[in-house]
Image 1: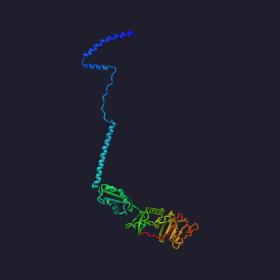
Image 2: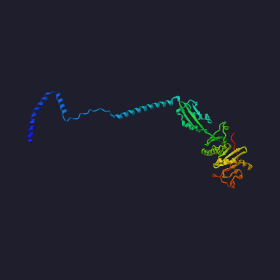
Image 3: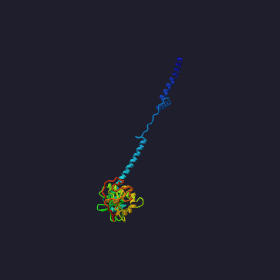
Image 4: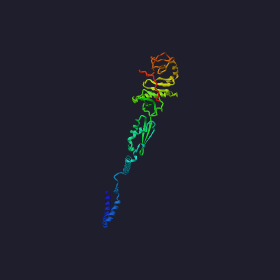
Length: 354
């Protein structure tokens, strides 16, 4: 079998040999262009073709998304720079232009004043005349205005181009007080305000004793809280009992003393530190009986449980008959709040300022 196959292969090779030589001779006679074309055809017909070479595409230095972000950032920066430049220009204009200068005190509007004079406000704002409104220290001026005794709170605002507006909230007086050698007003927080001409007849308050301008503000405030509680309780039931009070002694924190005036005279009433209305009603209900029992009614102590002591500030204070549930005397009676040793207050009524 091997020989037979080999013989067949030799015959085929012999037949192809002349044909291959003839083909090469014809190829040599053809032009070089035709040879290249034939070579291309041969390569196209070859079963082992190489992959086509890709044409390179030129790209930018940054990816497309990164480039778009850079553009957005650049635009935002440009806008920010433009806004900043405009703000700087406006700031320079606002701080240097004559249009924003306070020409006179007439450019300052003041509201809410009744007892505070315009001269007091002008004294505070005097240094701001001919000054640019943007350079006026509003918070500092507010604090300075609130140092005026009659001013409880203040606000200072700019009104462009060249005006200021000041709103004042004044304090509300609740009593007269002796300030040195003269009479002044005091509010619920213990702040003392000077009286202006004509104000004495405008107000009708009791006179507070035991509070002075030399006391620390905290002491005055604590004592005035007791006074406010007294007046609130006396008027809570609609009886308007506070109208009968001429003065209130706050010198003893454990014993509030009120002087009550009526057509028959003045009586000093000891009310302690609590239950002011209840104790005062006892006085109102029995004052005429006590006047009938005693030659002169000067003072009444209502601090004790189920017991009333008449004229306790005079030697030999007496207990009215029927005023106590059990026998007791002024020497043995004990008050409800913890009492401390104290001097007897002089029995005198203080009249209101005319």
